[in-house]
Structures are given as structure tokens and as C-alpha cells.
Amino acid sequence: GQNIDQPTEMTATEGAIVQINCTYQTSGFNGLFWYQQHAGEAPTFLSYNVLDGLEEKGRFSSFLSRSKGYSYLLLKELQMKDSASYLCAVRYSLGGFKTIFGAGTRLFVKA
Amino acid sequence: GAGVSQSPRYKVAKRGQDVALRCDPISGHVSLFWYQQALGQGPEFLTYFQNEAQLDKSGLPSDRFFAERPEGSVSTLKIQRTQQEDSAVYLCASSLANSGLGFTDTQYFGPGTRLTVL
Image (cartoon, rainbow over all chains, first blue to last red; front, side, top):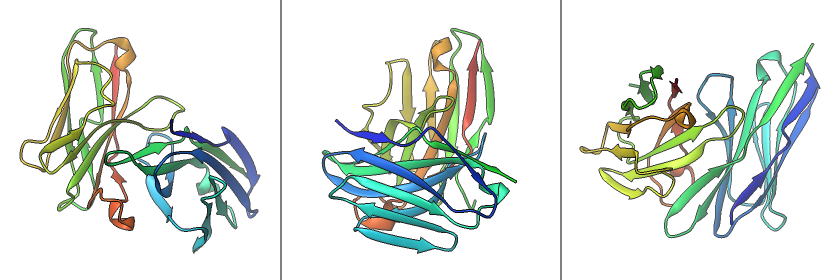
């Protein structure tokens, strides 16, 4: 079956760096996405990885290791507005392409 | 519009009532997805359209749930005889494609409809 694991909650300090991990087990892996979701709002797209390595986009970076079924989202220079849930999502091929989402990691940024 | 829109944003229904939730995808997006999100959980797949064709409805929890996209644009998710366990946020997402070819498959979400069944 398909499965995604990520920590339930994390707390970090404003200005610091935080790494949110995601591990997955899927057949037919076809890409990994990270989304940010503020409470009561829609998930918004942050990053996409399909090849191994690091993708950097401003304060946010995402890493993928397909052989280990592992990804992380790195947030630098944390700001209070970064307090949100971060969803790891994996696209896979199984008679068509489907995307499954992890339960999300709630990040609390404190002053 | 610039993004995915959904209406209503909030819906309160009495148990047994039928509800209809609307989704307007981003113009030109071929693929449309419906998800159900319970509090503190990630979105759970319900169904998927490519243009007007419903290619996957494996996530619909029961035959009380029905979705359509008759002209390949706006979609409606209908829930008949609502039950308390149907209370959740229903998210709609659209993408340019769903072909496994990279960024074109990125899904963009609407704000969701929060359904409360009393």
C-alpha cells in the first residue's frame, strides 16, 4: 500500500532553521510535493521534487532521496507567519496518477 | 478567476439533508480533484476528473456521494442524506494535467467548503 509519515508537531524559534521530515512507502513513485496550509485555509504549493537532491526556493528548500523514501522541507530565517501545517504529498502511478497526502506537520514558531 | 474558487464556504445541514458543493477550477485546467479533509488530517482523495470524464471515483466513501463535471469546467460534489460523519472540509483542486510529467501536475487548491452536519 501507499503510506506517508511525518511528525505531528514541531516548535521552533523565530529566525531559526527547521527541518520537517517525511518518509514514504509507495509503488510507482512519480514525484513529491510540499504544501503549506494555514488554519482554515487552502493548501498552497511550496515545492516539487522528482529527482534526488535539493531544490532551493528562497527561504524554503526541499530534499529528496528516492532510494530511502525520504524527503525533508527546510525553512530558514523563520518568521511568525510560517506557523502553519506542512503537508508532504506523493504522486504515484497505479493505473493512472494519484496523489496521497500525509497528515501534515503543525509548525509553531515562537518569538 | 485567478485561482480555484468554491462555494459555499460554509454549509450547515441537518442529518438527512442533501447538499451540493460547487468548484470553479482555474481556467484551462484539465484535471479536477475532490478531497475530504478531517480536522488535523491531510486531504483524502475522493474523485478525479479529466475534462468531463470522471476517471477515478475510488475514494468516494459511499453511494451517497456523487460528483459531476458536465462541461469539463465547473464541478459539483453532491452528498445525499448527509450523516454526521460527513462533517469535514471538502477541498477542490485543479491542475493543468495529470500525466506524470512534472510541474504540469501540480495541484492548486480552492479554499474549501466546511460542511457541518447536525
